[in-house]
Image (cartoon, rainbow, N blue to C red; front, side, top):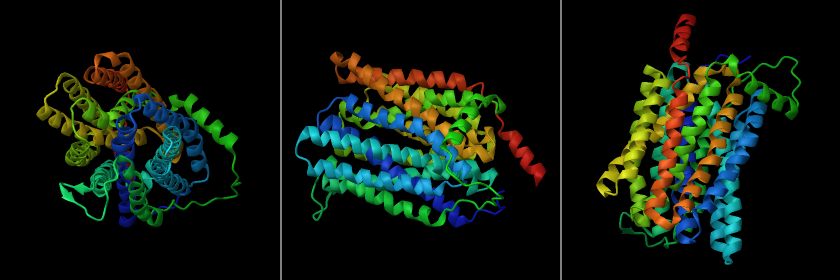
Length: 439
């Protein structure tokens, strides 16, 4: 039985700050620099990044539901979060070591891809336990706000990461030369990113603890078979929790498309819109405030209107934004669409986590966040492959056509996800009413 303890402010703050830490990795490695390093600097095809990312997602999909169930069984999430975070940090730094230290191109690419697969797998694995800690660090009625603050602070981390790492890449920031830091190019981004991830994750390691439980005659042994059986039962018995399976299927489609857009945005900006590497970094820095505003605003709206209604609005916003992106080549309109995408990017995470929490029992959150990860990450195997396939099919038509065709395919996936989401029940109001009655 869980002890009834009011979450402390330092605990909530430390949980939120981890969103800042891991978003530095997400922005600098997953979105900004690794794909650009492979496709632009090393002149490789998009499929190198697509396949390595998809394989890391396959590992997540296969392992996280089981490991999430094990964490529920032993009421421990922080040891898993710390371990996955440290592995991600180490292998992010090793990408930079491979880029600097290996002269043979084939060997360099091989090791860099292996290190990226491990780093991204660990980053995604850590998110499972990070998300599952949310109900323990705030009250039920503030889950939407705290989730929104976490996403908002996370994207502030994107700005911090881009600004602090940019001098290592460009040798300058905002046109100001940094004499003591040599220009190292894209490959110079990985080691500083790993260091920043570690520094900002430390408060979470120190101040966020697993809630205490009383264990009466519980046999505490590792039983993977029992955990696997529990996951299979949760999948087969989803009728006990109305809307869970439908929500996870909807997420399969829309989250897959959103994450794939993020993966290749840096490549799209440079290949289609003609931005330089430095201008691309400025683009990400300048649109991030819209992500912060959108996350905080939609977080408050989630608590007020319920997560399902807000998520529907967010997906409609994505569909409209990507449609305009496909139809335009105007730079000024591209900046506006970039800001709108920023608003809806953070908001999709802000509303999705509380929606899942409203649909499942609290004591099974680790397991269902494992399934949540399974849905999104299994789909993330599919999305990059769709992107690579579209780019390959339309390769003879030039960069503009092939990348816009890829965006169109992803937009269709979001439409499918939205249609499925419409029939997910909205249980948020019922849960709030029950909370007031108990009080």
